Image (cartoon, rainbow, N blue to C red; front, side, top):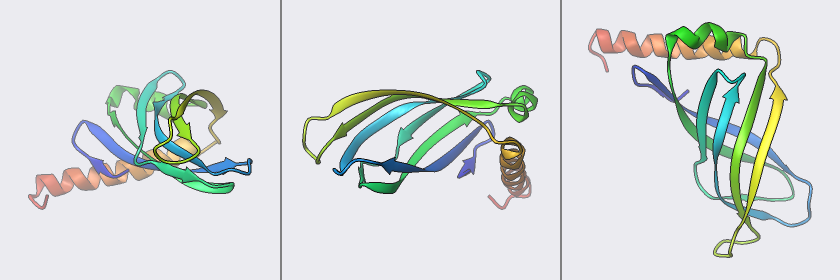
Length: 136
């Protein structure tokens, strides 16, 4: 989590991308959503264009989600996430990109949502406390 603005969380996500091909790929743009058990819809976008070399590469995404305190209990019980969107990929910068739709669903390992909420709540509480005592 990068910041808490009172009613929303802004964050960065770094994912490992595995390119099993022999060519490097240039991801010009990627936009989509992450859905958590259909309870939360989180928009994501690629922070900047990225080369994906053969093997493993890291890809950074940014996003923001509006916090609804009534949905936090449902967040703790989320069992799956779904990423859906569109990527624009070329073999090199400046080349016409092809668009690729993606729609992947994965299970959330036990304990991950609780750990994420603990980290988020701690940062959010710290931000609120700083605002209340005039340090922010």
